[in-house]
Image (tube, rainbow, N blue to C red):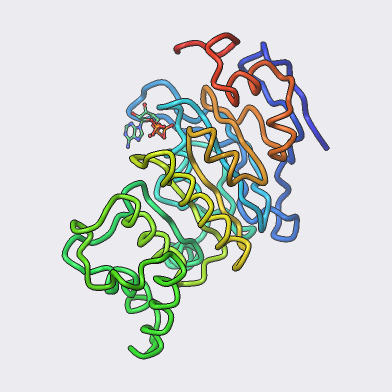
Length: 278
Ligand SMILES: Nc1ncnc2c1ncn2[C@@H]1O[C@H](COP(=O)(O)OP(=O)(O)OP(=O)(O)O)[C@@H](O)[C@H]1O
């Protein structure tokens, strides 16, 4: 089923092929948001009725202008923020209707790459990547070593195990954060602006690495960014977030070929079109 709403109806604009979430765990959407609303301190809503079913085993990029609520959306998916209204369903469960312990267990099935890699400054890269395994599993140090080194190798950091985060570049920190996000073999990996602070070449290399690792391991990847080039490199599906709503969700080829004025303007970075400065 698809829904199309005219691009000039900002309150309900949804264009392209949009898969509405269906309750349950076997509909191809491990992550579902249903009419999610969020505002802070009585201010204007940041999320104003976001409905989305993110396609399993694919890379979905959520694009949107700066300050539009992409990081807030990501924090709802991982259960770090609770919606004012609506539901966030993960593996078929409303994450705010389960116990704290169950929510914690659900979160263990997520890997998250935060903007700066979110590494512990006091630990070297090896210990940073080993951290989730030491905290959440009973694996022996030799098992941990095997897993950590495999993932550090995968992201090209096997020679940098002893480095502190402050001794390496931003791109290396992100790759180390990516390795750490993968060690628990997550079903879902979330990326908060993996391209932030990187030059175009390193952005492209990181995006290619993310796509390669996804091809190798599978899983549901959701990437938050406002970088169109990253979306080009990575996306199987594209969601566009604007004015508190997901205004488009569909296959990447369709989005890049779309003649919807909003989608076209956003994905071409054109100044002329329905998207203004607000
Ligand atoms: N904990 C919070 N308390 C109050 N306001 C918040 C909080 N978190 C986010 N906001 C506000 O929500 C809005 C959306 O922020 P968010 O970081 O999600 O935007 P974004 O789309 O990720 O932006 P960018 O692309 O620039 O990183 C901003 O106005 C921000 O100030």
